[in-house]
Image: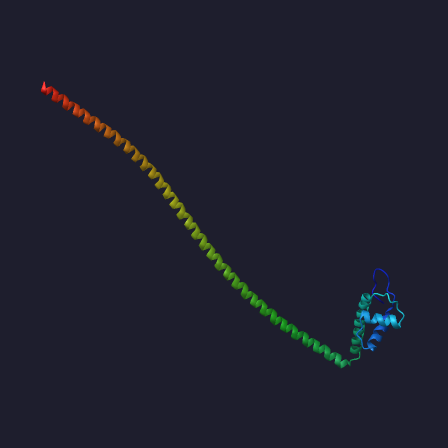
Length: 199
């Protein structure tokens, strides 16, 4: 029977499709939805309005089913010794395939294990390099902090020295003023003494 579909039922029977396939093959053409439709409409009284695409699905299903039935009949007709030999061959083939797959699987596991070990070693090396770089960064941070501290100390000492220089400058100015005053006093005393002697 054609496949069950939602919508209008097909206007042909499975027997008509099988007969159409047979007629198409007798004519030497490949059975398709189009070729079977033409034969069915021309020779089997099927309406022209049938869907060739839906019919093609039915044709392909029936062809597969026919091939499967043919193979089943051929296998059923084989002598028991041939069937036993086929089973023996299948057992040997299965064993050979499983042996090959087991070897491949073992090889893949071994390769994967080596690769994982290499990656772990690389990872360990990279981690060691990262630790070394972090230590270097910490050392540089300490050096920078020490330099910052030294710069700060120098700035404080410079500020102190600048203040002392300013103080010394003022003191020097005061001393210079005092020296001028002494010189003026000394001159005045000298002049006074000279005047007193003249009298």
